[in-house]
Length: 122
Image (cartoon, rainbow, N blue to C red; front, side, top):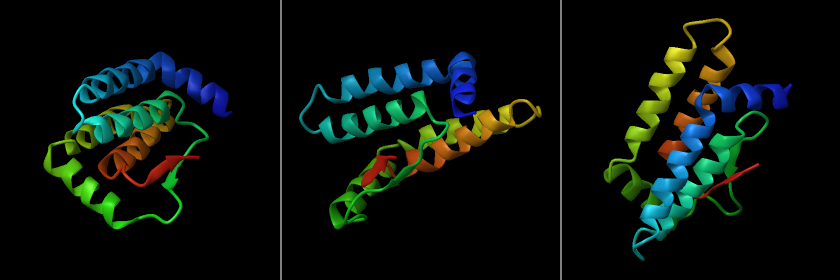
């Protein structure tokens, strides 16, 4: 069932979301300061490419003080807008019965895009 959900996800915009995450991640990696943020965007891009059957969970020994500080910087720099976009798309997909599974995946991505540091895809 996860494979069918991932195929529908890709058809209905999942590939576009992943490409945007990867492009912005590459742009962030141009500077040394942006590399940690670019890595998190790559992680979110991979997670948004195949969200069905995967979860973003705490890594070993997490949350640590470094990941908490980086999550705070992440939010202060405006990356919370990604979560708002996922929330809006989740609500849009949940209007129809067929789109509810896709909407739930957007809600999962919204939650994981608020605090991405210290997490890993499982």
